[in-house]
Length: 315
Image (tube, rainbow, N blue to C red; front, top):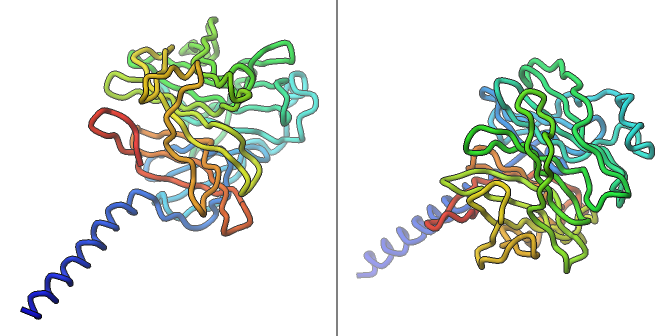
């Protein structure tokens, strides 16, 4: 009987570790150079890349998605037209890029601004492939000034169910916006839609990322404050809609235009203030968080993105 109990205990422990392995396998164990902020993730061939905030747009690459190294930045010096729209921008400091493949070309949207201001601009560069480089300057996409009640930063290219390109963007002020793009120029065609805001939280919403899955458009956004190390209160929230222009409702049916949003990730004892998220291929989510074990340094986190039986996202 004692031998039987030992065997049962042994297999229980083995099963527990197996189950733990299944759980933690969804959180990618990253090594190497993983210092990023506002990452956008993409895979080209067998190589993974992230593009993130920093001098000239910071680029990291990985052959397996786990071990990361630095790659050359996109812009070695500021483009001449940037200062026309954002005269006080810090030299070559570029925020929250978004990289995606569409119609056989790689499109790289990025933003230039100054902290706390909505005198901002979204720019565009493109290339035949990431590996080939030779990025083409496609110029200004849209801009905002202090006369606007929204902010032209944090761009995200999304493709609707019919294959049409759209650009989501926005930070604080009146919230997240969306505009349709011309599929040739990849620039706005006109109407700007409002799709999410936090009117009772001082506008603390930014970094949209939209993905389409099984009849729904899912809007992920970052709530509250970034950029304060371990004191950051960033968190990732989401809602969904059957139309790309909304309304986006959270799990409780609250419209994200009225402050709704179901929290996906609010961080933990080590990883503070997760946000600046990007969704890739509906099954991978990248974001940054501030590492409490490294004096609050922002680092890259990647996880498998899962979906429950009701079609809601989960880690």
